[in-house]
Amino acid sequence: VNPGIYALMGATGMLAGFSRMTVSLGVIMLEITSNTRLILPIMLVIMSAKLIGDLFTPSAYDIIIALKNIPMLEQEDESMGWQEMAKHPVSSCGTKMAEMEVIDNSKPLTA
Image 1 (cartoon, helix red, strand yellow):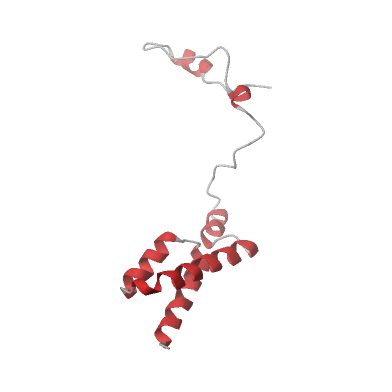
Image 2 (cartoon, one colour):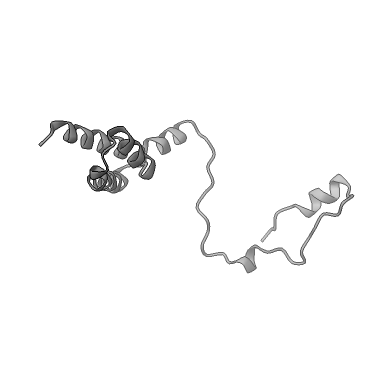
């Protein structure tokens, strides 16, 4: 039993719980050790740390983004199909159009 392996697994779990990175962290840890026999324990530690972390808190990067008020895209609305999103008749821009025509064609739909 090598204590260095336990230290590696602890560091892997801490980084996975903090950053919620999975594949890239696994590759980094395997590159550090150059030991392919540790791929299964590393992936088990990463997945368990990520799953447990997701149950309790958002990732550190999500918290930082929220604190800095960086705008993010919202989740897609699954209740709306393409029929509701499509504009009919279809509007298109010609090769030579006035600026106001382009603005009028690009106005969002109103309910």
